[in-house]
Image 1 (cartoon, one colour):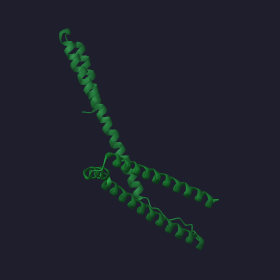
Image 2 (tube, one colour):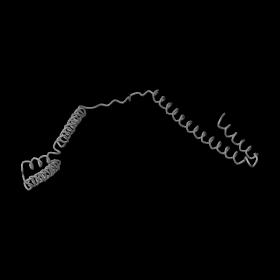
Image 3 (cartoon, one colour):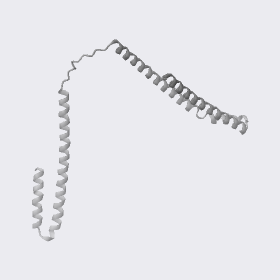
Length: 174
């Protein structure tokens, strides 16, 4: 039975419901309305499946068409001089060197991360050893302050180095 047949039969049932006695009419009307909503849901599902299948068939036919298509190389010939070939070789070499530098930097960063993990608890362990040896809290505070000052000097040195490299680069580029 087709979807049109189901829709037609639901209309016929609707006519039959109007002929039912008033006592049974409400129950029959409810059952027919339920049947109509079921038919509508089935129609929506069928149209959704039909749309999906249409899209799949269209995609398959387009894919087959693309696979059957043959491409020919262009008839134009390019003449590349020695200068361009040397330039290409230099670019390729510099690209490889940059990759090596990036890999080396990545290895250094991984090494620093592993060293950081190893040194993470060293400060606390040194303080515990200092207390075990009988160093006073004031001596430990002096050592801690000295470590912070050394860190500050290191950061300032890094900033100065970066600024020097930047200005040197600007001077060199003109």
